[in-house]
Amino acid sequence: MRLPTIALAGAILLATVVGAQTYPVTQGKTYKFEKIADGVYYATGGFGSNNVVIVNDQDVLVVDDGTTPAAARAFLDDIKKITDKPVRYVVNTHFHYDHTDGNSVFGPEVQIIAHDYVRTAIATFDVLNREPFITSQKTAVPARIDTLTKQIAAEKDTQKKAALQKDLAAAQTTLNQLKEIKPTPPNVTYSSKMILHKGAREIQLLFLGRGHTGGDTVVFLPRDRIVCTGDLMESRLAYMGDAFFDEWVTTLGALKNLDFALVLPGHGAPFGDKGLITAFQGYLTDITKKVADLRAQGVTAEEAARRVDLTSHAKDFPQITGPGADVRGVRRIYAWMDERAAGSRNK
Ligand SMILES: [Zn+2]
Image (tube, rainbow, N blue to C red; front, side):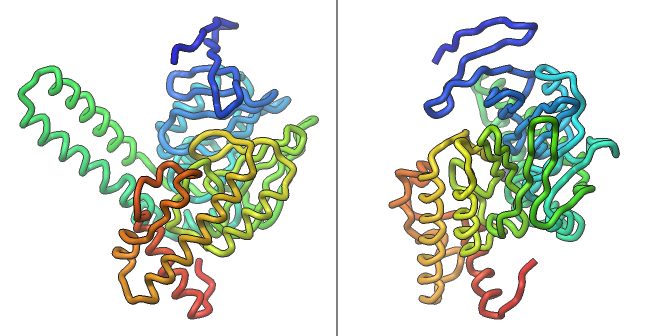
């Protein structure tokens, strides 16, 4: 689709369609900012999470900061296209690398705020040597470099070879950027609710219960009726490798009780329909039950991940194209059931 462009105050504004809604766009070098409401921008196009920028009277709060220090620096550079106010607050919606590994670029004057659990997780879980970092980045990027190197050696067509070499250079850049990661815990934590009062704007940080992880925050803007949900609720299926499944369904119920008109998720696209949250609750209930049934038949988690059939949810989550589910989530269902059977409180 060709988009109309309008030059305004040095920024390029494009009209873009997100769902049924059109928002003005400022395109940075890396990130695209959609102006959702006055002072509220949804940032996409970086490495890792989709982020949110909230511009206050004196300062800026950002929600999540991407996979690498390089991604966070690119984000900060691009934010200068929408405001000259300083970033003073970073909210980490949860501990996963794609939302927090930009943390190390912020100076001590910046408050990095998250649920208590996020600080514990980043400080003690050895996050670069566990899932989801291992399969998503640590082993995936070197494997891609290896594959591309072999393809380049075998490719005879010069144009195709050049395209592969470009991909290889990009993968090598990614690998170098991953090496720069220094997991950095939040320096301000809370346990159930925290409110920032910023002029006329109230920014609520809410822990609604365990779910996607043991400590997900939603950022609620009551005046604008906007909620930033991280990966507690995406517009697509979320990673489930650290989940608490029955609690997640309950926590999503608490999310639906908030008075919002728009969700800005950690991945995917903004949406306003609470029916999508209900659909995801249904998916979670269904995968938990179906995997439990397979486990009761004595099959391994890997086999259950191949066999579990969730295709009836494909109408809501089009990434489902056939039977099967992410093995990391299915392994987590097995472990979570063991924990429950043992009555333990998993970290
Ligand atoms: Zn994420």
